[in-house]
Every structure is written in structure tokens, then in C-alpha cells.
Image (cartoon, rainbow, N blue to C red; front, side, top):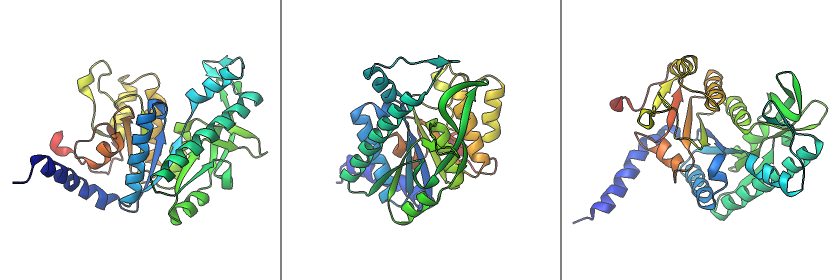
Length: 298
């Protein structure tokens, strides 16, 4: 008699099969941030997930942040942070530290991917003119070298994907005068996913997903269409940092991305659970003409 444990493992693989078939050779952009970047075990789990996606036929691209690490290093070198409207001002010295730290994080992720047998290349938005930016203002006030993305030139990413590399992108770009700017990693991931018409954009965050009622942990929404996401913002059901994230998801779908996933990076192997299981564990946002996978659960 076959042990039930082995049958359960086989069933998990069979459940994943239609998703592997559906998304084979499709581009998935993964915005990697939050606690999953700080905790070493979670970091390894995320990289294992991305490597598995690559090996079963996806074309993953990682876009990572590094805000917590930048803050740590700014403190380490004895610099006093300045804030305008709650946002840290990135002066020339801070930008120098930020670029150094982001490149350090970038190469650590590349090393981890390489150690699992997949070829990765770490780049910034400066490489190949990937991310062209302009100065970002906060309520009309200058916050230093913080950039809004104007244009994305995805050629370098297509070249890497075509040659079977896994690109790892840190969110630093240049303006028309070749000045260096820090970019919000969520914005960079959205812009890159849009430019490549990615099939999926996945956000690893420190929340479980989108709730119908933020005070009710049982009200996690598994899937919602763009209009439903807009309604949640309009009705005040979501607030704080979730509003720009959700708005970014809506913009990405309206600009060619098929599905956007918001999931809790603190859950081990959250990427695999969200992408390869019927129920998923986070929230998937999809275009109005896209069919919900989980209608049997609704």
C-alpha cells in the first residue's frame, strides 16, 4: 500500500500541472522586499521558489528593494537622516550609500541563485538605459535624488532572458543628464512588468493580501478584478501604504500585465503556494476580461 504522504505529494504536483502548462515561457516579475529580505531563512526560501519557477519554464525577473538595509548603513556611517513630508531626503551622500548598499544586496541575491544552479545576472536601472527617470517632488518640495520613471528600455532584460539568465534588478536609474536616482522598488517593478507585458507581477510584502475589511483577518480576498480593486480604494476599505500598492497593481494591469499577486513574504514558499495551488494564499488582481481561477471557492 502506498503511503498517504507520498500520494499527497503527488497530488500537489498534479495540482500545479495546469499552472505550469499555462505559464510556461511567460515572464513573471517578482518585487522582492519586506521581511523576506531580512530573515536569512525566508530569503533562501524565496530564492528557492524563484529558481523552481525558472526550472519549470517560467521567465522570472527579480526587482528588489533595500530600504531597511540603506537605513542601517546611513546610521552606520553617522549620517543624520532628513525628512520632508515623512519621506527621507536622498542627498548626494545618501544616494552614494544607497547605491552601494543596493548593489551589495543585488550581488548577494545573485550569489544565492548561482549556488542553486541557475545563472543570474545582477543589474541596476542604469545598465543598458533600463530605467530613465526625472526628479520626483513631494507636494512640490525637493526630496533630493529620488526619481520618477519616465521610460523603460527593456532590451537588456530581453537579451538576458533570451540567453537563459535570471535578471536581478536594483531600483537605481539615471535622468537625461546621467545623474543617479533612487527609485521606489514597487514603482520599478510595475514599470518593468508593464514594459515587458509580463504575464504576472508578484509583490512580496509584510501583509497577507487585500482585505475586504482590514480589521477582519477572515476577509482576505483571494481574487478581484480591477474595478473591484478601484471600489475598495474609493470606498475607503483600504488605507495607508496599501493604496499606492493597489493603485500600482491597477495601473500595471491597465498597461498590459495579465495578473498581479500581493502575498505575504513571511510565509515560507509563498510564491509557490500562490502561483501553483487552486486556492492560493494571497490576493490576485486581474483584468476585467480575465477569468477567475477560483470560482468554485467564491
